[in-house]
View 1 (cartoon, rainbow, N blue to C red):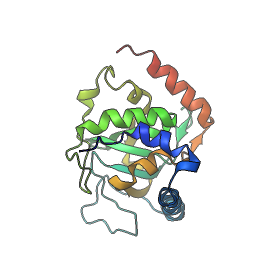
View 2: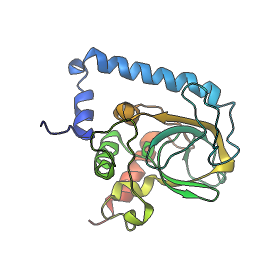
View 3: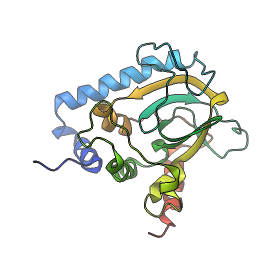
View 4: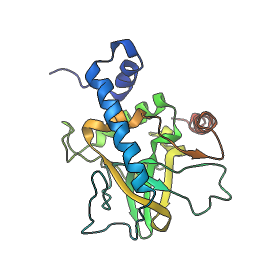
Length: 209
């Protein structure tokens, strides 16, 4: 059996534009169109509770959030006035439910290479190694304490409050993980993305493994 390609390998392959198959380039264009078309709708949507049992789905939108899967959504943090910067269009892997929201890893806080490395570290906890449509990454906050094993997750771990969610969610299928991971759709406020990524790298580089 051939060895599974890591997300870091996928990234290295993707940046060699001349070698990327037409199908892959089309996939990026297709997924970007989903994100862009959904954003206008997302901006008008609100989530009244953390999980809606019988959420009405609108195309790619859903009100149901399942820990261990990947989602985009619109968010405006409670303390936006005092935060040094924040992402209003997170790409998050929820890892723990809270009474008023959830705890999740937002990959947008990392350079593309570091996103790939972190995702490769996390995907070993997938409940299905074939990465089928029902796959979840089963990791909890307790497994990340100290961040010695997942140091890149430290600047990405954020608490999201239901009251401040400004949309329903765009679920990302397992076959779209690599595409979503590297799409340049982060929406940082108060600071540009290069400055955010540089600070994140400084934060996790201080952690000893």
